[in-house]
Length: 86
Image (tube, rainbow, N blue to C red; front, side, top):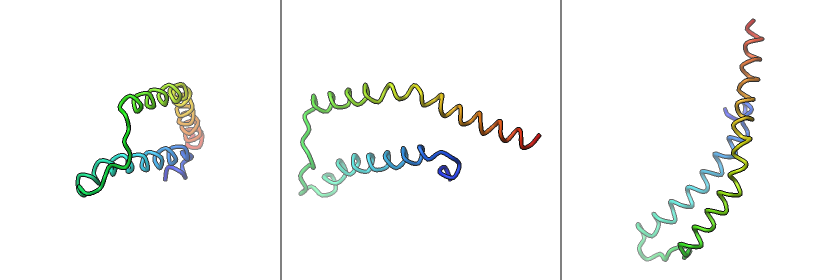
């Protein structure tokens, strides 16, 4: 539905979010349900914090143009709908 409506980027964001969340939650749930399994990876807290900080700083500037792009799409769709109705 979102893809047909011209929001293909939203489909991609949803798919990436789904994969990331499944990995994250299974990383914690699997050892709790199957205690014989060892953790998938051992991460140092500092290393994880530096990685998250780097990703936030790298992706952060991309967040600024996104609302303008999305609102522009909404405005164009609204104008087209208004023109078709009038």
